[in-house]
Image 1: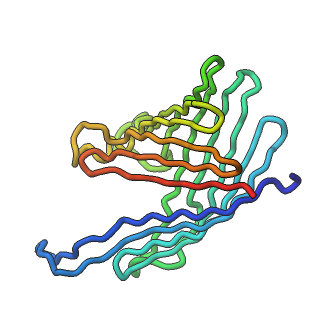
Image 2 (image 1 turned 180 degrees about the vertical axis):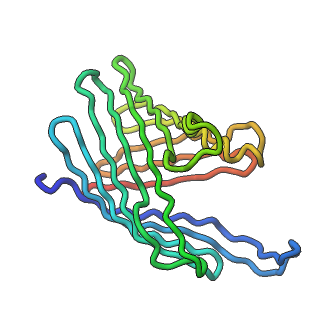
Image 3 (image 1 turned 120 degrees about the horizontal axis):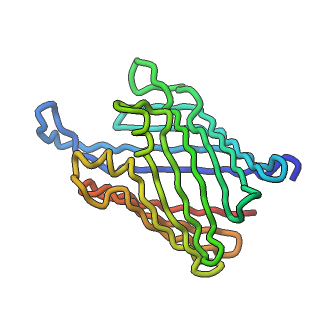
Length: 224
């Protein structure tokens, strides 16, 4: 298409219900909830023979007890399909370029800009795609610059058939951030499955945070 492909997306995350305590840690008998939501629109298209791009504009809303915050942000990404090696793709993305329109406090808050780079390789003789990425490159390090490489993630997607895909991954930055609380364990390990049915794709994944628990993600993508 001349303008490319357009899509809308809605992401909702509910943290559940919490028991309220006072400054001494005593239960007040009241509860509160927390949630986050992002609603956006995306445009994607090709650039020449080997490049593809995508740009999203989104409205982000966050609530915690009776407080809330909101922002407008833009995400962008560029994908390169290598002509010199079959099945190799490399990409870069920049997320959360924007500004807050409502704040949790009286102080102005900035958006957490995220820069990621990564690659994916489809194996020639096995229905498996291997991925490797470096995350959160914009966040400063307390030590030498090479420590940013510790924020890597790796994974694989295995095609059982044309309609079912199994996924397994590991996020080292999640493991590092939870280690002081949960020790060395399976924090950062994730597993999931994707199912294609007609023009819909159903995705499920579970991410372990060690002793802190886990995160279940469900997704539905449709083409109309």
